[in-house]
Image 1 (cartoon, rainbow, N blue to C red):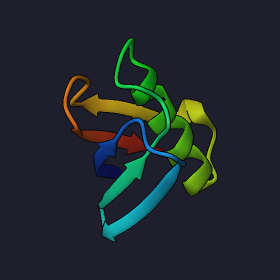
Image 2: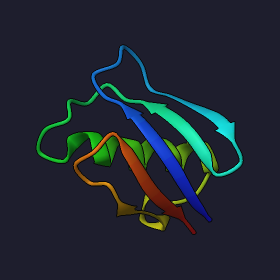
Image 3: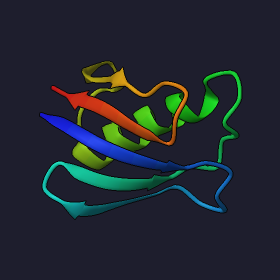
Image 4: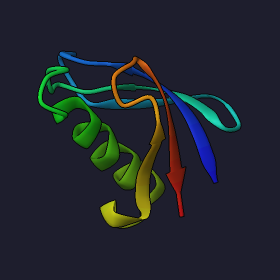
Length: 72
């Protein structure tokens, strides 16, 4: 399943909010440098969907706030 994610880095807590099927907002505490926010989003999505982190892949948007992840 592919999910469009809007990332909010440097938040005070980690949170996942589903806006509609296939679209969500993710708040992470990691800064948007050195790929840390992307990894934090992967971990948050894996925990939210109860899958292994290796089953969550970034498809598009590595440098932007809006990203496309595939959860398998």
